[in-house]
Amino acid sequence: MSTMTAMTTRPDSTGAGLAGTIASEWTKLWSVRSTWWCLAGAAAMMAVFGGSVGHGAGNRPDPPAGMPPADQMLPVEYAAMGALLLAQFALITLAVLVITSEYASGSIRSTLLWDPRRGRVLLAKAVVLAVVMLVAGTAVAALAAVAADLLAGKYGLFVFSDVAAASLRIGCHMAAAALFALGAGTVIRSTAGALTTTFVLFLVAPYVVSQAASDLLVAVANHLPGLAGMEYIGTTGFLGIDVPYSPSGGLAILLAWTAAALLTGYAVLRMRDA
Image (cartoon, helix red, strand yellow):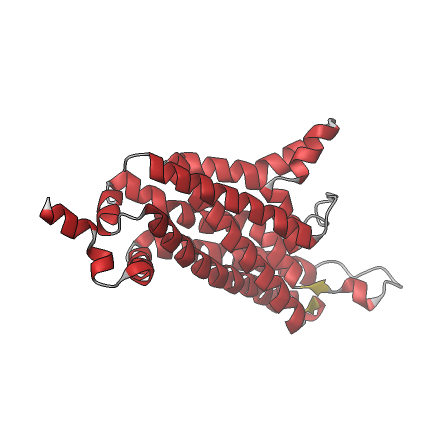
């Protein structure tokens, strides 16, 4: 009994607390190859998509006579916004694996033995993920914009403030989406199940339901995290989808879904055995 008590109180007795748990989660994240593969995959997809958009803009037929020069240009941040629609799932996969890989391997037991405060463990994972995804999302978005600008030639329009703002919005979107995926993974405990749920809510359902004849289904689609996030980063207009709220409203809806997923994950984590 005394040995078990000492083990379960180890983080507090050493003064590690939340900072120690965050440090542990940070180390675990960067010590597995899947982290590097997911980040590399996201960067490659963003660069290839951004470059292909830029190449298409730079090699299109001569514009019609009389077209204003401004209409001939490609704001390169648009390429980054479009690239995110699919590239985000490489980063979401990483977010899901942060929790589901531990359940699959059984290492979640060691994690909870080190820090039995389950809420603190989930909070530490969320903090690490939020920071990594904010930075990674912003960086890969900027990479896509640069690739588009390089291949668009004289038709590329690179305005630093616009690219920076769009890249930061994409980074914030990725942080929120990753935390949603973390919550889903905590509830479902299956990599395939959590990825399917996130994929459906962020990509499939918004497109399918938004085309439905039912006003109720359209209203539901408008408030799914996928469309809300797309409105926040500015891609709904590209797809001809109208939503009844502003980009800030889209962010609020996305954050509400994220909070709900994390709170549900926390409740399930507390109630279920590891």
